[in-house]
Image (cartoon, rainbow, N blue to C red; front, side, top):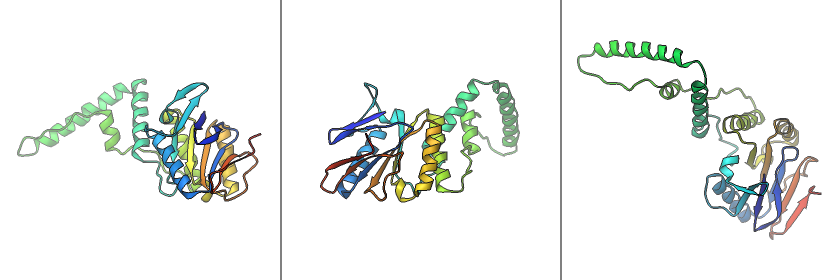
Length: 227
């Protein structure tokens, strides 16, 4: 995927072997650029455009952005909706329909008998797979111990459920050291996931596998490791 902007001379070429850094040293410009990316990934108007080859694409259809590294959860509404949609699809393509009809019949029989014990008429909704998934709170299991593991779970979930491979992560270098970053990069290369990191300033020298655009305080543009 290629990302372009009239305000940034260098194109952002994303690939799984080499994460891209956009380091912005001007605080107002940093806020503005992050807001523009958020708008793009939420289907809004943005100064950034996204391309697959020579085809213009919507950012939200091919990627995800993570802006709040401190409080993101693997059980947010978007992930749950994608998960339940996938389970519905798997159900429709499987031989589980007969088993579900048995469960449904037994459950409705139980509800009918239970409601008959009341002294007034009762009504209830028909049992559906969607309702069952919500009732049982089906969600991704919390099987991580560290922030690095949580981020990897986040990437894997969206890659698997949404079928995407492009991710924009904001402020990652402020919370992961170089060792953890290289483990993350190794995972992304193995699973063919492309990363764009947007950072406030250049807080450390870039790693050998990283490419960077640095926007200075006076909005000059410096590139590193792009040759």
